Image (cartoon, rainbow over all chains, first blue to last red; front, top):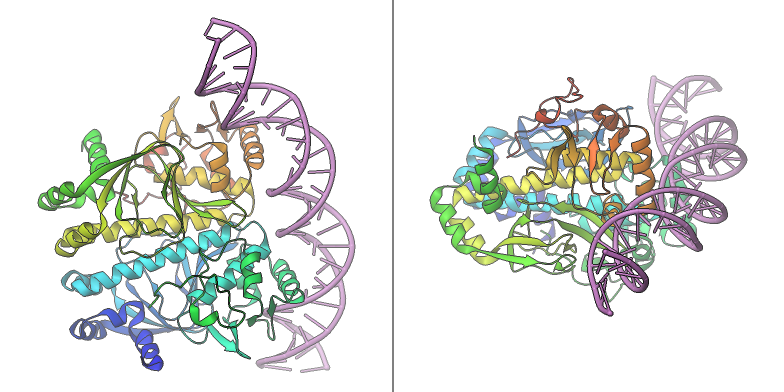
Amino acid sequence: MNISNDTADLLRHGAFGNRLEPATLKRLDALARVREFRRSATIMAPGDVLPFVGHVQSGILRVEKLLSGGRQQIVGLLAPCDMFGHIHAARSGLAIEAVTDVALRCYDRPAFESLVDVSPDLAHAVLLSVLDELATAREWAVLLSGTTVAARFACYLLIQLRRSRLPPAVARMHGRPTVALPIGRSDLAHCLGTTVESISRTVQRFTRSGLIRSDTPLQFEILDLSGLIAAADCDGRDCPVIPAELQNNRGEPELEECLPAA
Amino acid sequence: MNISNDTADLLRHGAFGNRLEPATLKRLDALARVREFRRSATIMAPGDVLPFVGHVQSGILRVEKLLSGGRQQIVGLLAPCDMFGHIHAARSGLAIEAVTDVALRCYDRPAFESLVDVSPDLAHAVLLSVLDELATAREWAVLLSGTTVAARFACYLLIQLRRSRLPPAVARMHGRPTVALPIGRSDLAHCLGTTVESISRTVQRFTRSGLIRSDTPLQFEILDLSGLIAAADCDGRDCPVIPAELQNNRGEPELEECLPAA
DNA sequence: CGACCCCTTGAATTAGATCAAATAAAGTGG
DNA sequence: CCACTTTATTTGATCTAATTCAAGGGGTCG
C-alpha cells in the first residue's frame, strides 16, 4: 500500500476515513469545513458544547482540565487525524486549546449526527473511533498513575511512539525512532502532572543514562528502548506496545505485535 | 417515574437497557447469560480478549494495569450497570478482576455484534454507552492527575457521589450523602495511585478537619461538600459535578446542574 | 541592544513512600 | 463461646523524591 496516499487520506477524513463507502465519504466531504486557529487559541472552553465535531488536520491540540488556582492539567493531546468534540452532546467540563497553529476539519454536529443515523458504515467508523479514544484515555490514566516523574516521562515517550500515525510526531533521526512533538517544556510538564523543573532534570538524567538523546528541547531520540520500557515500570505486553517497524534497532524480540492500528 | 422499576431495569439491561425497542430487548435477553465470579477472581487477564461483553449486575470490578514489579494500578472501577468488555475486539493490555463477589450479565460477543449490526437502536445505545465510558476514563485521568493524595482522595469521593446510579454505592447515612463502596484500603490505594498508609493518614486528616466521617473503613459520610471540592483542587463546574438531589444538605447553590446521566 | 520567553541548574522545604510495628476486626476450629 | 490464626487498618520513624523558590544562560524579536 502507498504510504503517502494513506497519509493524505488520514489527513482528509480522519481516523475513520478509509473505512467508509465512497458515497458516505462524498456526503461527509460536503459537510466539511476547515477552521484554523492560532497557537494558544481556545477551541472549547470548560462547559461548552461545541456546535461541531471533527478531526485535526494539522497541529496539536491539548485537552485539559482547568483547576481553581488557574492551574491546568492536560488529560490528552490531539494530533493530526484524531477526533475531537462530543458526538452526542454531553458537557465534559474539559477545555480544548491549540498548542500550535492548527487546522481543524469540522462537521456541523446535527448534520453529522443525521448522517450517522442513515449511514451504518459511518456509524461503525464512529464507534471504532470512540473506542480508540477510550483506549487512549485509559492509556493516559495509566501514564498519570506512574509514581515517579521518570516513569511518567518514559511512559509518555512510549505512548507517543506507539500512537502517532503521522510523520511529524514520530520519525527516525539518524536511523533511530524519535519523538518530536511540537510541545514545549511547559505543556509537557502539564501533561505529566509535574513542573518544568522536574521535566528538565528527568530529561537530563535520561540523557546521561543513555536512554535518549535530545538535540533540541522538542526532540527525543530513543537510544535504548528496553531501558525506557523498564523505566516506565510496565512490561512491554501492556500499554506501550511499540510498532513492529520501530523495533528493528535495538529491537526487543520479546515485544509482541502491535495493534493493527489504522 | 418509578425508581425501583428503573433500578430493576438498569440491573437487567445495563446502561443502555431503557433506550431499546421492546423487540431488541427481547433478542438481547435471549443472548444473555449470567456468570458469577467470586471475590478476587480474574475475569480478564492482560492480553486477553473476552469472548463476551456485558454489564455488571452486582458487585464491583476493578479495571487495572499490571506492572512489571507485580504492582497494579487501577484505572477504573465498574459498578452495577456499567459495561465491560471490548465491543470490537482490540487487546487493551488491561486486566479485570472481581473486587467483591460479582454477577455479570454476559452476551456472546459475535452474537452481540451481529445484533448491533441489525438494530440501529442498539447500535446507538452502545455508542452512548461507550461515550459514557470515555467520559469516565477521562474523569479518572483527571483524578490521577491530582498532585497530592488529599486532592486525589477528595476527587475520588466526588466522582463516586456523582457517578453512582444505584443505591449501594451512594446513599444517605443520617441524612447525609455517603460514599459506601465495598472497597478496602488496599484497592482504594491502588485506585489513587498511592499506598494504604497514605490513604489512612489522609482519611484521618479529613476526619479531623470535619470534611468527612467514617464509621466503618468502607463508609465515608460527606460532612462538608464545599470543603471537599476545595480539597479536590478543582472548581465545581468541572469534573466532580454533584447531582442536584445531593446538594440540599450543606448545598452549594453555585453548583450547576448535573448531566442528565441515564 | 534590551525585553521577553524558554530551558536549565542550584538549594531548601515538604509530601509521600518505605520500613517496622501496634491495634483492630474477621474468620476457624476446638 | 473462646482461644487462635489471618487479614485489615492505623500509627510511628526514617528516607527519598519532587515541588518550590531563586537565579543564571540562550535563544528570538521588536
